[in-house]
Length: 302
Image (cartoon, rainbow, N blue to C red; front, side, top):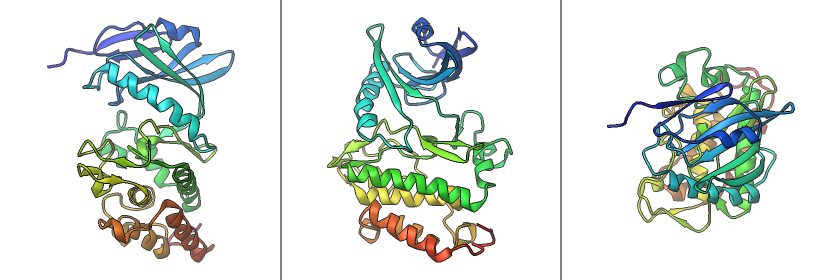
């Protein structure tokens, strides 16, 4: 049984951890103005501000309150993520600006601050609140005009076509990887820590990720994880952001029948019937958007 969380006050925020930990090093980066301590990855993240500039700091080394593993494993994963962020640099990806060891057994990665909200803010809006509370980022996103939601989806697809070109596959991509700025109507991807170079084989059985986004092979020990896997991920993304999430019925879809058919082919359980690559999927998606044109799409004006 876990002990009650320990509360640690750091400047303007209070962080929860399972065991006492030294966070004084954060003060060298600026004043701590935000904390994100409910992740199950083993990381605890902070917003810091110095001389009017804000940064996002992802830290591994403390025993996060919702983490059941060992901090040293989280440290190794964060270290391994640094070259992935460097190699997959893209306008749609939050920008890594620094990384360093902390006190010999911790590790920090520092990013430019992006004023977005997580589209899977499960710690503040757990289901069913995620789908019903008008303050929930998920609810607010679903209420945006279709044109704005399609633009956000296009950002995701452009980035993953880029990932594919550089020889990587997306692992653990889901709506918790998405930040949306409702003022600027802009989306960025914030979590690619587990993306892998091809070829990649499933050595876990059930891989990291949300089952709402995962292809059948991501549950199969020894299966190849490749372009067709990521095609499934992209199709599932469309159903989460434009449809009924797990309910993939046309009646729940909001973006027209042409795009529905593209998304449905992408999430075919038979990988051989999916598009062969994210690039091919994106080409079909773009053609489907052109077919929709500026007309009313399934009851919504673009």
